[in-house]
Image (tube, rainbow, N blue to C red; front, top):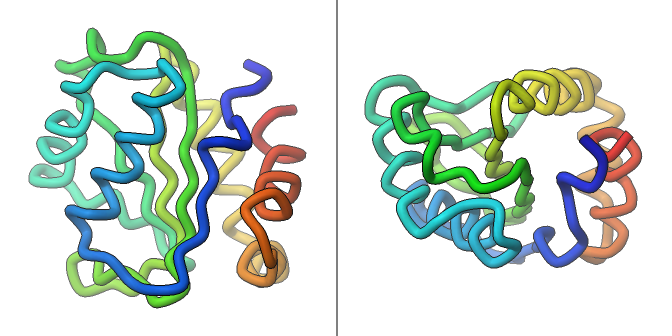
Amino acid sequence: MSDVLRSESVRIHPGSATREEAMKEAADLLQATGAVTAEYFAAMQQREETVSTYMGNELAIPHGTNETKQAILTSGLSVVRYDGGVDWGGEPVTFVIGIAGKGDEHLEILSQIAILFSEEDDVARLKAASSPEELFQALSASVNA
């Protein structure tokens, strides 16, 4: 499961975004690396209508539904940090991590992300990263293991 996160899939924005804009960017980054097809954004929206992908600790993990697995070509992650925040259904989000898991790989990926974001010190370190490259390095040690 190595290299699910690639450096070109990590971005930092000084401003804010809407939940829709954040999900679209997460899906577009996954699509740009060849992990998903163009249909994946609609799959993310479908999932969000059913259950919020807000995870706590300023983190949302938008992903598709089981019925839309055909839109996933290979496992991948996208990470966008919005320093101005995202209103995620009334919850404050700084990190939006788009996830696409081929087969059951998404469960392992989700587990690694949940562990990383359960530690406030780790979240603070990720928020302190001054460039996308620095953020990628901080994240890849956890998710590209």
